[in-house]
Length: 232
Picture 1 (cartoon, one colour):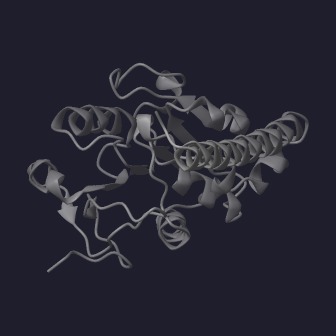
Picture 2 (cartoon, helix red, strand yellow):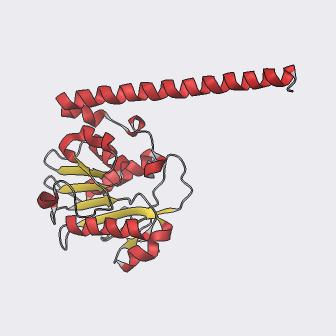
Picture 3 (cartoon, rainbow, N blue to C red):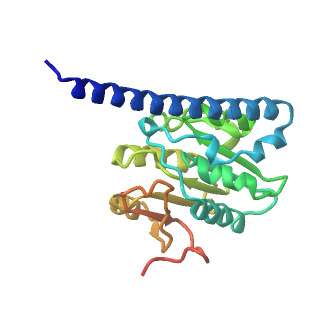
C-alpha cells in the first residue's frame, strides 16, 4: 500500500501534467484560430496570404516536416529571384518554408510561383497551391499547363530515401524547361551519390533547419550559381 507521501507525490505529478496539457491545448487552439482567421482573409483578399509566416504552420513530423531557419529560407528565395525574371515560372516542391519566404519577398507580379505540397494547410495560397504526393510524380493539378515550362525549381524531398528522391526527380524532369530549366535540390548528404549520378553538382550552400535537424543537409544544382558555388 502506498504511503501518504507517495500518494501526495502522484497527485502533484498528475496536476502538473494536467497543467502542461492544458497549456499545450490552449496554444494549439490559439494557433488554429490565427490560421483560420488568415485563411478567411486570404479568401477575400489574396494579398493577406503574403502576411503568413512559418510560425502559423507547426511541423508535422509524421509528414517529415522540418522547416528551414529564416536565413536559409531567405537565401533560397533570393537565389530563385536572382535566376529568374518577371515572366518566369517558379515551383517549390515539398519546400513550403522556401515558398512562404519567397512570397514575402515581393516577387515580380507577373512571375508565376507555385508550391507543390502534400499538406493542405498551404491551400491558403489558392491557385498557387498544388496538392502533391511524391508517390504519384506525374499526377497533379496543372500538369498540362506546367509540363516543360518551369524556369526554376527548389525541391526538398520529404524523406531521405532513394525512392522518394527518384520520384521527386521524375516530377522535376516533367516540369522543368528542357535545357534551360534550373533546379536546386536540398536534401541529406546521404543522397549525394544519387544526385551526382543524375548530373547535379554539390554546392557550397548547406541548408539549416529551425529545430537543428541532426541530418547533414546539402544542396545540389544543375546550373552554375554565383552565390552557391560548387563545393571544392
